[in-house]
Image 1 (cartoon, protein in one colour):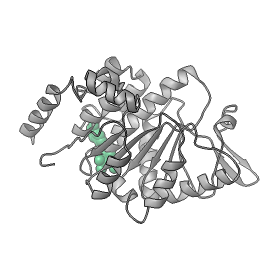
Image 2: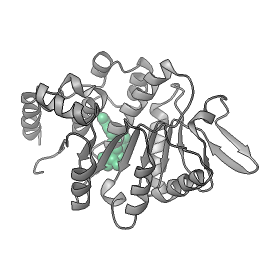
Image 3: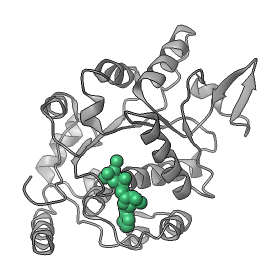
Length: 279
Ligand code: ADP
Ligand code: MG
C-alpha cells in the first residue's frame, strides 16, 4: 500500500499542469494554500484529524481550488466554455474518509460567502440513502462547523422549506408556526424521499425554496441512483436552478448507473481518484 501510494502521488504531481492540482500534504497546509479559516482548521484538529487520508489528499484541492488555477490552457478553455466550475465523481472504499472530504470544502465556501453576505440561505444539500447516514453526516459536520455560525440541519418529515428571500432576516432559524417547523439552514442533509416531498410542497406553494443551492452532494451515490431512489434523487437535482450548481458524487463502488450519469450530466471534466490500488 505504502509503495502504491507513493506511485499514485507521483503520477498526480506529474499532471499538475494538466488536470490535477497538487494534493494537500496536511490539514495545516490548507490554511496557507486555500485560506481555510483558523476556526475551521482548529475544529479539524480538535477532532483529532492531523493527516488527510488519501481520498482527502486528492479531493480537497479539487474542491477548494478555483479550477482555473490548475487547468492547462486548453482544458481551461474547454472548461470555461462549459462553465467556470467543475463537478466531481469520487470513488473510494468505505472507511476512507469521504465525509470529511466533502464537508470541509462546503464549510470553507460558506464561511467565505458569509463574509460578504450575512444572511442565511440554504446553499448546499447533501443526500444520503438512510436517515442514520444523514444523521452521521450532520454530527460530523456540526463538530467541524463549531463556532463558525454555519447551520447544518437534517430534514425531517413535515419540515417546510423557505424561499431564500425570506430566509434572510432573523436569527431564529427553526421557528414553529402553527405546528410546522420551518427550516432555515446553510446545509440541509436528507434522504431523497423526505427532501423530494418538502421540495414538492414548497413548489406547490410557489416557492423556489432551493434556488440558492450551489452545491449538491450525493453520498453513497451508487445507492442514490439505484432504481429505489433514482427518481427522487433526479427530481431533487432537477429542481436546483442555480446556474453555478456544482455536483459531486461519492461512492465506494463504481456502478454502471453512476458512470452513465456522470458521463451524461457532470460538467466539464470527470476526475477519478482511487484511494487504493487496482481501480
Ligand atoms: P467513508 O464515508 O469513506 O466510508 P467516513 O467519512 O465515514 O468514511 O470516515 C471513516 C472514519 O475515518 C470516520 O470515523 C472518520 O472520523 C475517520 N477519519 C476520516 N478522516 C480522517 C483523518 N484524516 N484522520 C483520521 N481519521 C479520519
Ligand atoms: Mg460515507
